[in-house]
Image (cartoon, rainbow, N blue to C red; front, side, top):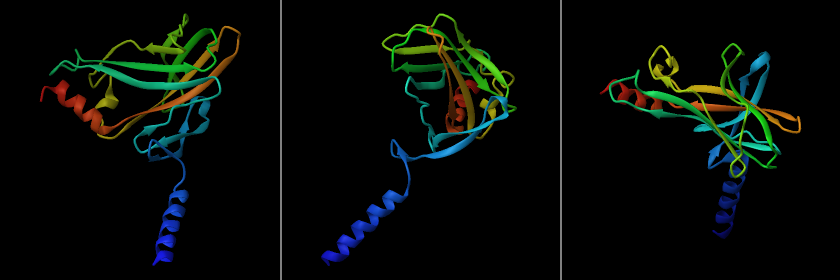
Length: 185
């Protein structure tokens, strides 16, 4: 009996080791994304979202949106993309540019900060607000999850420059909740 329990525990331990890396209790997989210039890179993603991009200098803390909802009015409801990162070395920044990578591999400017300020080692930037209409935010009206890839170009005052890519996944369930409010139902 004692050996059966030990064997059972050993098999649980081995199966736990075989499942691969996890993040906050979710399995992590390397997912390919097409980025600017037509190249493909792999970034870590779980079934509930992307992991924060990170290197020795910076860690992306946020790439998502805030919504200001007006019940029954998509045109008065506003969506603002919000981005943030932490500077691990507190270097003085010269500029921060955040661009959305399009499906064709092009880039669309979302935020350009030529006077970035670090507060407690953190930078935050926001896009201009956009109406949540089907014409201006068509992805919001699709019934599937929406995945965006953002390119962060961070330039320090010392002339160094770092490029990081951060996926952002908006679930169909979250989109359905927003649509329910702005449709007035």
